[in-house]
Amino acid sequence: MARGFRNQSRIGFRTLSVLVVSFLALGTVAITGVAAGAADSALAHLKITEDNVSIKQKGKTSFVAAKDGMALKQGDTIKTDATGLAEIDYTDGSLTRLSNNTVYKLTVLTDEKGGRQTQGTLSVGQTWQRAAKVSETGSFEVKAGGTTAAVEGTAFVAECLKASSGLPNTLECTITAVVDNIHVDSDLWDVASVSDTQ
Amino acid sequence: MLVVLAVILASCDNGGSSSESKKNDNDTESTKATTTTAGAQQAATEPTGTELAIDEYLKGQGIEYAGDCADAKLPADKGKWCSTLVSGGEDSDTATYDLGPVGEKPEKRITLKRHGDAVLTPGYQVDVGEGNVGAPSQLTREQLEANTLITGNLLLDQQAGIGNGLADLPPGADNNAGGGGGGGGGGAPTTTTPPPTTTVVPGNAQYPPNGEITVTPTVEVGGEATFRGSGCLPNEPLTVSFDGTPVGNITADAGGSFAGSITIPKGTAPGAHLLTVQGSACVLNTTINVAGALAFTGSSSHTGTYVLGGVAAVVIGLVLVVGSRRRRRGVRGMPPPSAA
Image 1 (cartoon, rainbow over the protein chains, first blue to last red):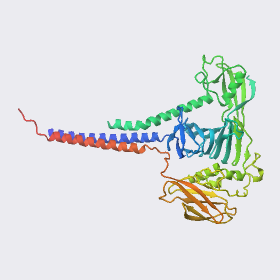
Image 2: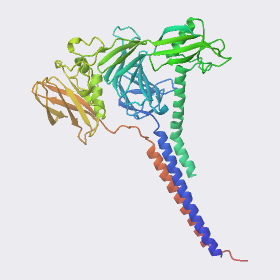
Image 3: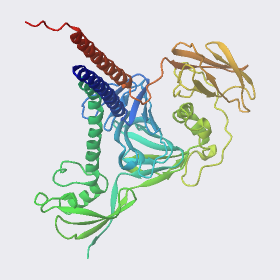
């Protein structure tokens, strides 16, 4: 009887051990997967083509050296110097290439409402934009010179360079469509009419 | 303990990522706040877009603007006016709003029109500045070909598997048109005279100013570098060399221009390498940077760490189980205590 009880105890212990190990293994794999998935949740990564490239992350006050492959998020500002070249690779296949002496801020970078919303603001320099096909709820926009250039499956250039007039702090911006059409809209609105309501 | 270990591993990066995504949400909210709401809490936020126009109009009337009526609150916004969108909006070129004191019936209807807009077809350019949109002008084929920001990036895109490289270059306007005048679709393709041959400056040819040969600036070992140039004799056979070693032959077209691609041989050391295109009347050199390692392209660089951690946790768990079983066997094998 004592032997039977011991055998039963051994079987119970084995079963418990197997269950514990399985539980731990499954739990670890699950957590690993979740963690890896979370790490992949960044919607864009930085590729440094040529040094030097710096970044001012959202909430920070100064630029620091950027790292090749680093995840980017909304609010980050990328800056290249006279030799620096960088590329922002979005996970939807779109990309933004920054030429030398360029400052570009990721003003919007979200995956809301089932569509990718990407918007950057070019302060100075030259950028090449290649937008992947955007869904109806998505958008790919670049702000430059107080206007917004919006695209659909398109390549285009946004440039804001020092004015040829030589006036200090004066930039001349241009948008050039290369592949497909670009909609350029002013960010300013004028009052067309005002009337009293009934 | 193992669960704790795994959780710590996960939270190391998760803390960054999940909180980042949460931050992203917050950022989005704050961005929205600048364009769609005002009210007491967003009073410090500068209005933009249509709200800026409404704000300026009301200021001119001596009235303070509280933003969207849906967000305006009493008594904080008492005395201020708010707006309700009636039709159109930021996504269109016109927007109509009803305006009135917060908590009361609207008194005015205001229609806003975008300050300027343009639709650019390929090859068209527009000057923009301080919210002004100039008249679109069509670039000439010559201007487009000379724009190394465009040609260089088309080639880079092609290398990345996007687009058709220089075949995507818009036809451009007739060279005699001088790039002026808006309207109309893309002009018909025009034949262009190749620019005069100039000295090629060796170095990184990412966006060479006035270069006669352009090449994919940075390529991985085994990758393909696309090059293009001009300044050779019409239909001339050309030799392509990599670091002085001939790797192939191409033929210039009727205008003396040429294009081709080379695959970077395996075993090529990272760094700058010389690409030469040589004919009887032209020798054009440029530099290709060969990258040492594949760039990080999107998936988590920490995934390996997590998997390793998971495997380690499982192994530790097995060791603990086996150890406890052995200990148990050892206890069972001890002689029973002798009876007094």
